[in-house]
Length: 134
Image (cartoon, rainbow, N blue to C red; front, side, top):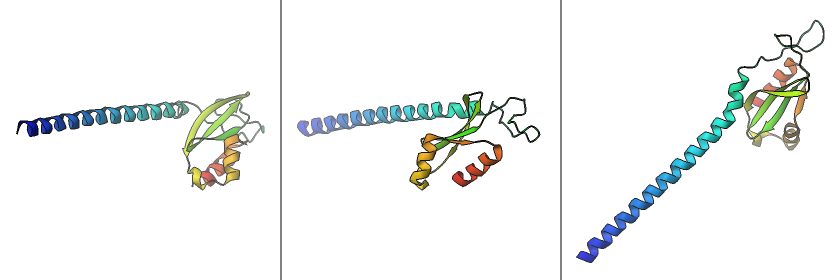
């Protein structure tokens, strides 16, 4: 009788230890995943602070509302999203990103987006995004 009680008690202790270890591992993995997502979301939060460049039809030169010029938009693939950047005097600034399904891309589209695609007007950017995000 004492041996049976001891075996049941040891089995209970073993199950408790396994449960605690599983809980700690699950907590740490979830925490790391959430921190990684938070780091990826930081550029998107910064994007809301920037002004989106618009085309100027009167001079043919690209300007935004504050009068700053820009050269082109750059659309580039990173992970499961395409990032939209704007080039100011040779410097690229992140604007925002769009979620896409990489499995729906052809090999040619995947290669083009991996290298980056330059678009020179807001209307061409809008048309491009409609093609890839709908």
